[in-house]
Each structure stands twice: as C-alpha cells, then as structure tokens.
Length: 467
Image (tube, rainbow, N blue to C red; front, side):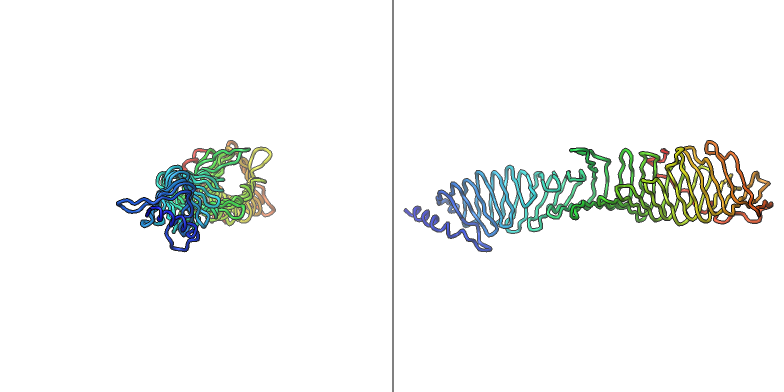
C-alpha cells in the first residue's frame, strides 16, 4: 500500500516539475509508467515509455530509465536524445547522467547550429556546455569535414579543439596536423603546432591536389565570401612546377604574399623558363598575373642573374621591371644601370634588355684585368645560350685590355657587341663628333662600376641545375 502512495505522489508532481529553475537537479517531465523500488543501497525509480527528464540546462529523452533521485543520477536506454536550451542536440544508444555530466556511448551524434560531431563516446557537461571525446571523431561543418583521434567542444563559444592525426578537408585545402582549433560559426581554423596543406584546384565538378605546403603554424578564416589563409613560422612547398620557401605566406584569393625576416623569401616557377625570385617580400596578385618583389631582390632566369631593390613582373606583357640601381650577371658580363626592363616576348624567341640611367658593363677577363663599357642607355638580346647583341649609347666609353701589356680607353657615341653561342665575336665602336681613343688609361674604371663590389647570388639548390 505504501508503494502505491509513492507512485501516486510521483505522477501528481511530475507535471509541476516541468518549469525548472537555475541550479535545480534533474527531475521527471514525463513517463508512461513510474515505479519506485526500495533497495538496500537506496530507492530507484523505474521510468518506461516516452521518458523525458530535465535539468536547468536542457531535456533528456529516452525509451526507459533508472533514476536515483538522491544521487542526481540516472541511466537511460533505447533511443536517447538530449536538447539543450542553447540549441545543442545529442543522440546516442546509452547514457549515464551524474550531477550535470552526461556520459554517452554508441554512435554518439552532437549537433549545434551548422556543425555535427560523430564519435563512439562523449562526456558532456551540461552546465558548462563542454564536451570531450577520446575514441576518435568526425566533424562536419559548412567549411568541410574533419577526422581526429580526440577532441573537445565548447558550445558557448562554438569552439572545437582537435588532437592527434587530424585530417581536414576544407573548401581550399586538405590539411594534416596533430593539433587544430576550429570556430565553425566564424569559419576559422587555427593550427598552432605545424602541419601540411595540399591546395585543392577545381577541375569541373571535382578537384585535383597541387603540391604540399609544410608550415610551422596556420590560420584560415573567411571574410564575407573571401577565404583567407595565413601560414607562418616557416613555410615550404614543392610541386611539379612551383617551389617556394619563406617565413610566412598570406593568401586571400586575389593575392598571395611571401615574407622573409632573417632570411629572404624564395619563389620559383620552372613551368616555362624557370624564373626564380628571392626577396624579403614577394607579392603575386590579379590571379597570378602581376608580381611585385621588394627588399634585396634576386632574380634568376635563362643563365641571367639580377639583383635590385624592387621588381615588377606582369605576365600579360612578359616584362620584368627592376628599379633602384639593379645589377645583372650573364655568363660573361656584369651590367648595372639606374633602371632595367627585361622583355621576354621577342618575336625571334629572344629576350631583350633595356637599361636606363648610368649604365656600366664589365667583362672580367681574369682576376687582373677587365673590359668595361659605360653610357646613358643600354639594350641587348638574349637567347638560351646567353648574350646575342649588346649596345651601349649616349656618351659611351670603353676601357679595353686586349692583353696584359696593353690597355686603352675609347669615347664614342655608341658601342655594339656581337656574340656567337654566348661568346663575344666582335665589337663595333661608332665615333661621335668628339670621339677619341687614349692610352694609357688614367682611371681604373668607368662611371657606375660595381663589378668588384657585388657578389653574384646563388639559386635554390633544388632547381640550380635547371635553366
């Protein structure tokens, strides 16, 4: 008889307990049948049929449950679901609840707004809105999908932390690392301990992977409809046509920028004529059609090496513009001038060079002697073998040493050099109205000489054998 009174009391009070206040323990909202059993260890309430229990943070639903009221604990069975007041939804096959903490097992699925976690087990603190999983998991958001060994979820910040053998498939990259943080609502990823990324290139309805970027740290986020990536603490990449290395890399879809700090950033593309650029800042913009470099710029192409303070390269007209007193090395000559243009689209499959300002060109015969040309303007042609034709004009001067005992200086309107197979074949000097040739030479060098003070840069080892 006493058990009947207990059962009636539970049924009468279950509806009144529906409106819970902050800090209350779990209570019954609904059940088709409620039975209280007296055990040596304490009373247990058996709930069956459309069971729902609630605490201050949300409601649990299941087919049946055992509830220990005094311990604030219950076991749930059947089709288990949880819905928090801030929108977190969880489903599982088994659940144990103890004082605000739910332990869920068996095909656990956590959903919150536009993200879903699939995992075999989950510990979820309903009061803190904090979940932890340790047996692997898969996460799906608007930005892609991800797998990992373990992780944590903070529902108030909509913030994931992943650990161990992480592989993320985003819209732009396939990412691999050992630790990652994700804010799906903000479309943001943080990789603090380094990893690798493969760029996804769209190809029709699918995509292909291009190269692999190794990095010390990474931030990925979205600004409006623009996806932005920032790699730092050392970045390296090599694929079939492109290689680069830098301290950091920034990409927002419209531009890609490499930065160097103590060492220069390096970028090379050997899909055509193997252009390689070293600088402290390298910027590619307008879908890769425009390139700017600043800070001790070094350029390598077609057996020609250039050093300048600035570089601008527009692939649409195939012109490189080097500024602030660039220096150019060919196989046999060193050229310096105030500004230089390198045109790479000559109709006869040759490149052309145009120098402006104080022009100086040096041919180092040996450690003891050199031939020099100077003037106000320069242009010349190059092919894969090296120089084809050079011309210096505008108050042109020359210092020539045909042998160790003879050395003379010439002043003329312009000087032409003709090459065969990259080697000097003949020289033509066009005398101006006041042209003169003097010997012996009173000065060692002509104006603008930098041949002995500049050191020819070295290419990246990986492509130094390419043209």
